Length: 216
Ligand SMILES: [Mg+2]
Image (tube, rainbow, N blue to C red; front, side):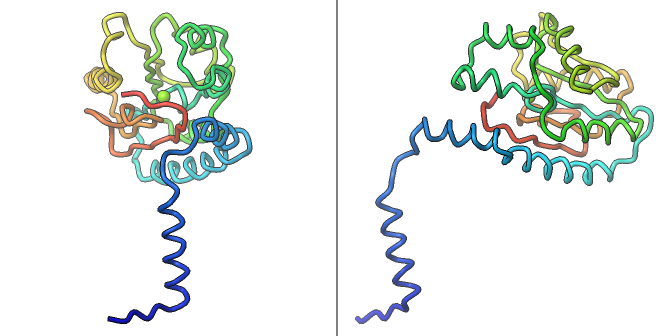
């Protein structure tokens, strides 16, 4: 049997062979540097710009009334912890993290203030629902205010009996309690799947990119 390959096919086969000879994951140091560059050199802000623009068009499909509620997560959704994570070489250090939060040093996630203002103009309710603890409530409120998130209905943090719940269970539980009080949740916005899944998560879910960590 004789095979006749075109020049394009030959080039493709050579490329395939070259690629198959490079195996194994990339070096961890290179990956960290790539992520730092992405966050610091405009890639992340550009991506956030298009995420926010498409979020606005999705939220435009919602009919707002005074009980219409949009639930925003806080960390890596409206407030960024990139700086502390970078300083800790992307290792989670609870003490460092807690200090960072109490020092109120988070900056707003790029373009999220614009999305927040877009929702605010619709005159529904904005709820910030965070996995942060009740002991961090005041610092979180101060940080939100400092970054321009001035008007909202409620900022909800974990009570002691919720400390051990998974993020998914905790957020579902809180959203159920909100619905019982008359809030009508139409959208959930967050950087983790646990912000978006579960009960009473609304018609629209908006995923904010997070290249630093995952929470179950
Ligand atoms: Mg988050």
